[in-house]
Image (cartoon, rainbow, N blue to C red; front, side, top):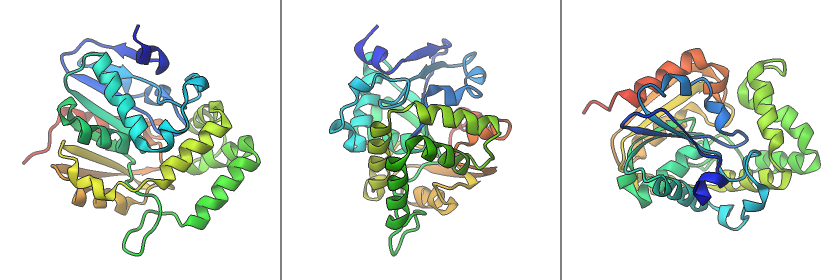
Length: 270
């Protein structure tokens, strides 16, 4: 087992000729894909991994300087693909991992045949000519709450992100993986995420991108999906689902899994 394979808890399932890599977002781990994986293993080689900083990874491996920008995470993805000797993959990313994949594809476009972006955003802060969904004051309050009482913040943030009540299975699952993160690491990663501005880099993403977005999402306004579509450098397509929440693959799998499968299997018609 390679160094990265062990550090990122890599799991390889299935044995198809095409490789799919599933990259989770903030506050989750590879278990967020549990509803999707069974539909892939008969036809694809599926690579699951935990992003550094997830509660399932060794916190001693988390380098605060390396992961102060998305480049550190993007080099991890490239390193994983190289270590596993993957020549080309279909990359399915959720939330911040959509932009991590986009950045990795700029650095090594040869490693990616397509990117499926679920609930992705190049920038979360509003600008005069851009609506990202958050004002700086919103983020200041969020970070203050995180530092004040992390467990209480997790309990409040999970239902808002999922779009459900505390009793729902999806909220309980997200609460669990969120609380598994070491608080100082969670704080650092979320600061990195909310500080990103990938807008000027989008034109350098030449790999075909399939953009999937919930109609209602606390973290990503639906207009951001169209912004990605208009500004990516290669071919792209958008599908807005009638789902609620930032983790629809966890909260609405019956709706979302067929959509993801279609975008994995079908290329963009030119």
